Length: 54
Image (tube, rainbow, N blue to C red; front, side, top):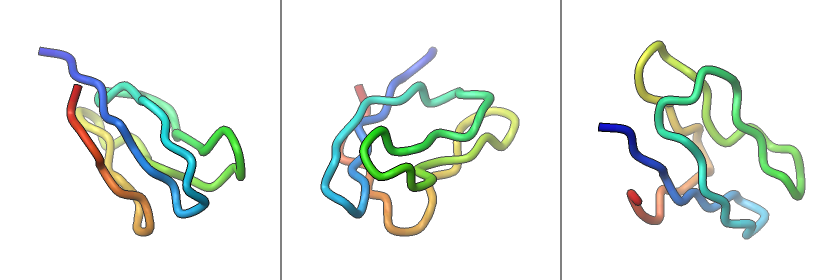
């Protein structure tokens, strides 16, 4: 089942991302790397918090 993640960047921005993304996910405000693809689920980078699984 596909899920979305609510991530919070170190700059304070919160955004929803697809948990099975195939590209690097960057913050829309500061451009920091939030998560990177691993083949199945994304790997959340250090400094990024998972607030909720949607």
